[in-house]
Structure formats: structure tokens, C-alpha cells
Length: 426
Ligand code: LLP
Image (cartoon, rainbow, N blue to C red):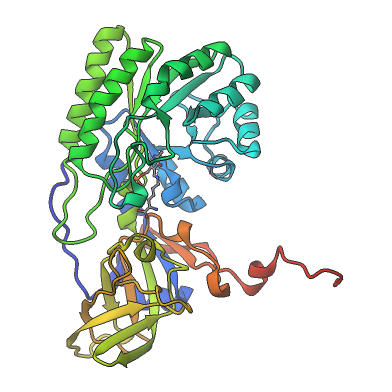
């Protein structure tokens, strides 16, 4: 499971998982997210040293993707009633050991509370109120506590989920109070969970082990399950590398072993990644619809925008990009270009840095009708899409065993307005 090498990205691409990009675009239209099932399988397998791989489905919760995850032996995390229902819809059982579905959140909305109580879904409480709300409805059940250890780190301040600026988790100093609350309802704290941020690094992830050990010792031997949370980064650029998974596992395994010795029983070790499992499997294919100069700047304007992939505008995230010529064989030079989308908003630029500063990317010269493939778009891509500017949500396609399957058809205009009504009109 050592994945420490840097990836190599090319700014030309003709295929995805062995299938022609131009043919995929022709068959399914653009913009379309295409996922490579084999890549997801490989990433789940990378983590097999951990007792349980729990997929944080918020990264990409499309049913067919969840089904790939399920077939590869991983279980799931859910952050909403909708995500619980998605997990049930693909065949995860509500109950089991380890629980196939865990609801992890900082609140229960009324629907989620009802589902967790009625369907026996294991809950991971991120606030003292959750303990009370669950406890009054589900006396005596087992629960997990999500602890905010007082520090955190993410690829952006917006993805840092630890420390006192974060709304996430039970503040570590509130632990004793929360244990008393749990006790009041006979809830048994069997699990502990810490997730300090998304897209962090080994140095920060490693600090969590010590905090987990301390917390588990404070809770005592009722603890049988510890979760590292997610946060594993992936390389979006050639100078970035994978986290040394063996070193990461070794740290957690040592923590688990020390706890086992203290508690004299087995401790189950979970990891809960989202990005790591699906980011690299996903590609957003868009068509170039305009190529224009603004003074010295050359823009490629695509039919995909931040309504399809919001990470650049939200975090200044970098995604690798490649050009696919509509007809191979044309000889092309490379240009420094700015790549943007169709939306009526200046921030609709894929090549931007944090703070909204426009950056340039060296890409092959493209014409209208060529394609730009935005890569590493499987995590927090489709799921963060919107209908801004009345754009339909993109189509999604899964490539498995050399076959392309439409797993979500593009929204139609009827889909867009389905729930709307005009007063006093039939
Ligand atoms: N567990 C919990 C409790 C989480 O809140 C998250 C992510 C994960 C696991 C999975 O984290 P991952 O392994 O994917 O880093 N939209 C942002 C990322 C937000 C992450 C939210 N929570 C982005 O596009 O970078």
C-alpha cells in the first residue's frame, strides 16, 4: 500500500480508462462527469490494512459510485437523511458489526433523527445536543463521539475542521460532560472519531493519534472502535505526492495496540476517506465553446462552469486539465490560457488561485468543438454542483470493464422546474 510516487499529468488526453474522450462526449454530451471504476477499486485496496474503510460519501454520493464502493468491500458514512437513504438504496444494511452506515454530523435535523432511531443507524455525535436528542429517543443504544481535539488542518481554511474556529465535533474539554449525558440515557460510548480536516498532510494527521489515545483513556474500556476520520490528500499537481500510507497506518496501529493492552480487548480501527477514494477516478469533460482574446489574455470558455465544479471558485483549487482535439491529427502549439465557464459571473474561472486571482495554464491550442478534460474531479465535483443560471446538472458516466454506463442522465428543463409553481395558474 505504498503510494509515495508523484503522478504524471499530461495536457493532452485522448482516452479515459481506454475509451475515446471525443466518443464519450459525442455519446453522452457535455458537460459530463466520467468515472473509472477500476481506479476506485484500487484506492479502496490501498487501504486494506485498516480493519474498515468507511467511505465519506459526501465526496460523491451517486448511487452507482456507492455501489462500486460497496462491491469493493467498503462501508459508508452519511451526513444527512438523504445520504442514509442513498446507502440503503444501494443495499447497505442499517445494522451490522461494524455498522455498515454511520450517521456523522453536528446536528440531527428531524428527518435524520427519525431515520437513525427507527432504522437502527449507528450515530456519531458531534455535539452535546445530539446526545440528548438521540438519548431521549433511543435509550441504551451504542454511540460514537466525534471529538474536536482542539487543533485541525486542511488544504484551505474552509476545510479545517478542528480547533476553536470550527463548528465540528465535541470540544475535547466537554468530554466529561458528554459522558455524563450519555450515561443519563444508558447510551454506551463504544466509538471515538476525530476528523481534523480535508486535504491535510501526514504531519497533522499524525498528531491525531496522541489526541485519540488520551481521549480513549478518558472514556475507558467501553471503547471498541476508533476512527481516524478522513483527510488523506491526493496529488492534484505533479510536484505533490501521496501520503505514506504505511507510515500512517503504523502510527494508528501502534495507538490501537496501546489501547488494546490497556483495555484488554480488541480495538477496531477505521479510516474514513472521501477524496482519496474517488477524486482521481473522476473526469469532467467539457466542450470549448469560445476562444477569445482580452488584450494579451487568451481565454477558453467551456460549457462547464462552477455550477459543475465549484472547487476553484471556493478554494482556489488547482485541477489538472488536458485538451482533447475533436479530430486527432491536427498539429498544435501550446499557449498560456485562462480557462473559464459559461456563467454570468467573473469568478467562473477554473484557472484561479485562492483569493480569486486568475492564473494561466499551458494548454494545447484549442478551437471551438475541442474538449477540455478537467481531471481529479471525482471528489467534491458533481455533489457540489448547482443549477445556477438555470444550468442543468451534468450527466455522469461510469466506465467499468471497458464499458461506459450512463449512471445519471443530464437534467432536463422539466427537471429544473419540476417543483415550481406559479400562484393561481394550473
Ligand atoms: N469525515 C468527516 C467527518 C468529514 O467531515 C469529511 C469531509 C470526511 C470524512 C472526508 O474527508 P476527505 O477524506 O474527503 O478529505 N468540499 C471540500 C472538502 C470538504 C470536506 C468535508 N468533510 C473540497 O472540495 O476540498
